[in-house]
Each structure stands twice: as structure tokens, then as C-alpha cells.
Image 1: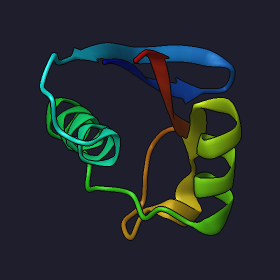
Image 2: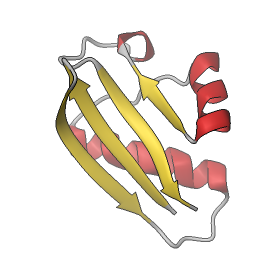
Image 3: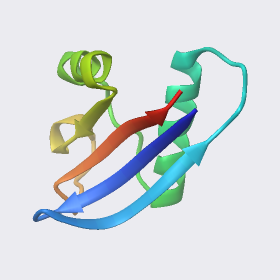
Image 4: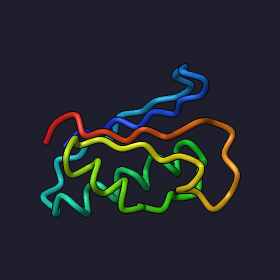
Length: 86
């Protein structure tokens, strides 16, 4: 599985990274592990998955975490999280 994490501000890509794993864990565990790795690399608190994020992710294999998803203030517009391949 390959997952792409991107931080955007004012329609500009500030940072991005790709998480790759060939682990045989469940899809859900791999997704949470990927998000955890991005948060560690980008020095962010883990965002909260809202119903909107879950629905977007199920339909499009991508979602955006905005200020509403974080408990602390963020200095970017959103964190985009997308599966590149499974």
C-alpha cells in the first residue's frame, strides 16, 4: 500500500511524503499507521476522523483534514491524505 500525505496552504503544496508498506495487516490498520507516520514526520497532532472524512475516504480513497479535525491550531489550510495504490 502507498499513501500520499500533503500539507496545503493558500493552494500551494508546502510538504508532502509517501508512506509505503508491504505489511499484511488490515487495510484500516495500514491507513491509521500511515496517518500516524505523516503526523510524526510533519510534527502534527493526530487529526480526528469526522463522519465527513470517513465518507470521503470510502468513496474516493482521499480526504482532507482541516482545522475542525485538529484539537490545536494549525498553520496550514489542510492535510490531504490519499491512497495511491493498494
